Length: 458
Image (tube, rainbow, N blue to C red; front, side, top):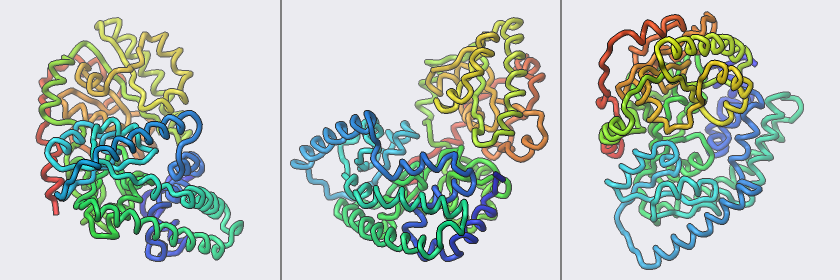
């Protein structure tokens, strides 16, 4: 399937559903936006997992979450029986604590903070250690919505595959039902937010169902909504990359990491929604503390982030990786370096498990370390099209973008420094030469996010 840029995908949505889709169905179109966008762009690779966002988890995982949810409900009830708080509050999504733990702590330490309680996010709520919770489970995951959303998503999928298979009139009748149901449930949540005196909602995502629903409820009643985006969802140029994780922006404001990041959005219709927020994961104090804990060693770390939806990309990268690992083996033997590979997630590690034999032959270890430890202890950090390299620069460590050696992919897919201009591109043969260069990098604290500026940004 052809990979579409943002404008091509937007035009395809208009072609299929009409240019008035977002006006005609202001709630349904936003809730289903991620599903529609992924179906058009990636086919079926992501859509089945997206459908699970609309329902409670099942099986053992669901049972554990349900049990934890009930315990948190009891805790919440007992706390509020004796507590009265009439101050305005900042509502912080559990996704912030899942994605940006240090930032979440800063919000907790400086502001009157609530978080949302639903079964889907109980692990993040526990992680947040916030005692002030707003229970939204029975609204966001009402029985009717849990049935309607996956069914309509399936109908949309069939329609995109073959417009003649499902009459557009029938599809729109289903969307009419969904819009009315969402309108009723969103109104309930809006009133709950008013009762709790919420003045601002902050989230790490505005496209994932839980967060989208809460944003729509806030916007219905005039509560400001702000999304602090992860770098990966905003990487690449809008004219060549899909920007699948963030466009069109649903929140009132989307905060990106850097000027380069912001510039890559130029041409988007709602640039006024996009602001430069800074890097959100760490604070100056945390970096200084961790730098003492994890001093630099003779270690090279390769950050693996396969683009799993593109078979040709994977073939091109697989050839490069074999050459890379053999080169790193020689460096380890000759210069006495330890070599690590850090996979992006468990899904990626499972897909490329065949690589483990090669890693063993080359004496390369799979990292299970905390992310910041890998960056700080590494003399140089290597990767392909990953925001980890920008993060290494912020932390004062050297980082290099490896070229695949395939002109098509090097030209089309690479970030081309959309986070920071001076991330250097090198070939595998250049690694040893770079190790011998004496460079004294310092952390870039000026690129970190300032919590107060986000809260007070009008």
